[in-house]
Length: 158
Ligand code: COA
Image 1 (cartoon, rainbow, N blue to C red):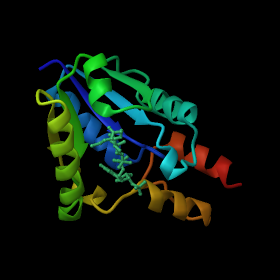
Image 2: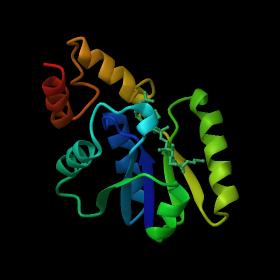
Image 3: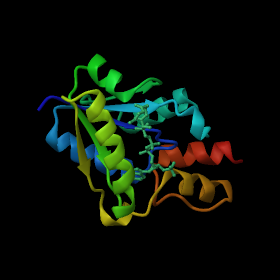
């Protein structure tokens, strides 16, 4: 199978996201990490900062490509000539939202399939907003994010 798209806000990318990307690389030749502008979420990191973080973290892996997007994910998938979306499922509580999104995306683009991967159990409770909150209060996030993101968080909240 050729190319899969892994969309999300990635504000910031966590070790849980990295775990999903690594699993996706075992299944697909290429993985495009599609970073949503997500204005409604008012991200801490700008799109450029999130793209840089991801490029620096996966620097040597030529099969990974990080891009930003602001429209519909179904349009991006067509543009990128991909029929597969990867999403992470951390817990049962993620299922309802993910099922709804996958169904809406299928209604708009019937050839597009969503594939759900589960991260290691130790990342099943992780979320970007909790990481941001812990970092903003001076907590240690080194077991949740890559050192590159840890440094950027320290910089933001110093
Ligand atoms: N490890 C750690 N955290 C994870 C995770 C994993 N494996 N998988 C998900 N999460 C967390 C994220 O950190 C995030 O946490 P936060 O809300 O505390 O910041 C949360 O789960 C969900 O975020 P994310 O996976 O980034 O998804 P999202 O809901 O922000 O993004 C889009 C969803 C961008 C994919 C979706 O809104 C989209 O496709 N937008 C484009 C517009 C569109 O097409 N809309 C119609 C969709 S039907």
